[in-house]
Image 1 (cartoon, rainbow, N blue to C red):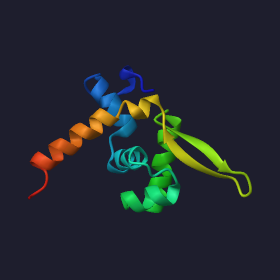
Image 2: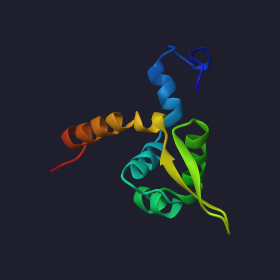
Image 3: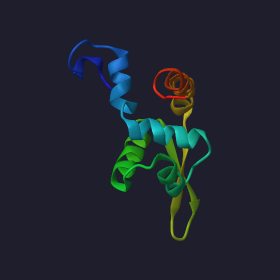
Image 4: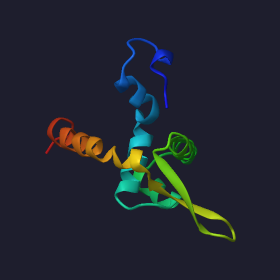
Amino acid sequence: MVRLSDLPGRPCPIAAALEVVGDRWSLLAVREVWLGSHRWSEILAGTGAPRDRLAARLKALVEAGVLERRQYQDSPPRCDYHLTDAGEALVPVLTALKAWGREHAVTP
């Protein structure tokens, strides 16, 4: 969680939310997990993100409580990603962004 008093400018929950998920790769990673891509390679393919950036964003999303890692294999240990309650709460935001993008950001 972000303390409003630690943010520059006007203290605002929007600014705090953007600190957590306000970059392209974070929201696209959440989108991919929401759409059913749970393994790292699937999320990478779906986002088109650079590998290092995706790894950093997934780590940050886990630390922020938006995603959780679940081990699905012991040897070698492998994990996949799932939405937490906080991640599920982003689904209406993604839906709204999708509608806005369809209406205002892409050409037919």
